[in-house]
Length: 463
Ligand code: ATP
Ligand code: MG
Image 1 (cartoon, rainbow, N blue to C red):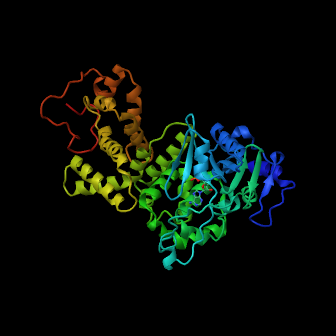
Image 2: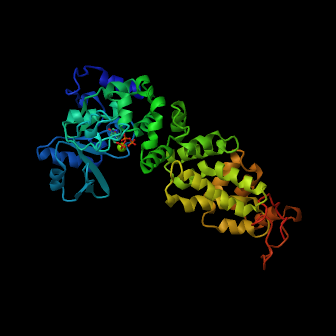
Image 3: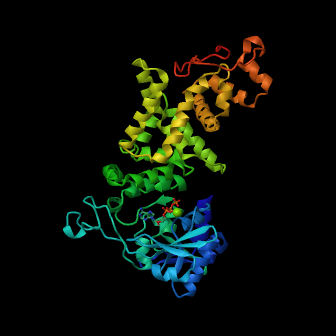
């Protein structure tokens, strides 16, 4: 439907430019983006810059998303004005970055990122001394802060569909790289020589997977071809940037599709053991997949999602395997679980480091899992009162639904949460019609399952 809409709108009279420095300009009658589709901040930023004699456009992902009828996450602006000129035009603005400067312009709660047109850094001989400070030994570009023309700014972007400009004053779309044609054909095409562009920035391989999944575009065969041979270059990318990109995928609302693309491109193996392991383990793979799907569903319904929950789900396979290994060696259950958690996190830090800010939540989710199996005495009530009960229950429930925990226990908890006091008593003591009174545990006697065996404790079996 989108395709026919775009072809209908763009199809007539839109001649593609013969040369990349001459754009095809689509007037307001040739597309459906109106200035009120643009955020107030981005629109005012462009207007102000143009009034001061500069050129200024909304650029990149936002234009692409609007042409596809999707709601953009944010609006970026590209301009001919230099950072200090931008800064002097807007009272509430600040220059960010040292080597590559951009300007943040604030409008109420909105921050618009304004970048000056940049020229594409042409990777030269990676062995050459001259290029050492601007690219690493594999061709990865370390600095590219050269101002350029608007046409050059289009060329330095990654995919043709990401190189479109929109002028919110004239309501025109400016296309230097056949981005519109590729959107109509639903193709993701790398600008320039794909192998060279991946060498400059290996993260573009992951972006190809993520954007093709998000936008429903096929990766053009020439764009996909070099990935298998160059995927090892991701090892040179700083961990923080890699993690950021993986998190973007997982929280994109299309995590399942992203993972599928990563598999097709063979990018999930080795380099991203988190996904590799999580999805291929027969015991916990279906659970990991269910967690990805649940995250996609929640995002679609505009519900909040927690990255720590998803990461805990992806690592659960490792934790659980190690936990049982240690138990089989004769270690008590809870200390085994503690060691297993630390081992899993340590192993993960050796590959793709998960920032430590997620540790506490992940550990809590894992540690609460065995407690769902303990349904005797006062323990279900104590678990219910735990501040992380909701997340831990969601985690357990997903496990139960994907064959990683007893389904019946998951269903029991679902009922128990909403049950009345009387019903709860009946559920805890099914054989006695719920008559047995709850007694508080006193003194040093440990109930089974707490620091003992994590095995199922039948309702009513305690005390
Ligand atoms: P989304 O916002 O949906 O994640 P996006 O394409 O807008 O996708 P951003 O990271 O916001 O992604 O980047 C904004 C724009 O900057 C892109 O559209 C693209 O033009 C350019 N860009 C981003 N990353 C790269 C890159 N690694 N190489 C070249 N250009 C890039
Ligand atoms: Mg964006």
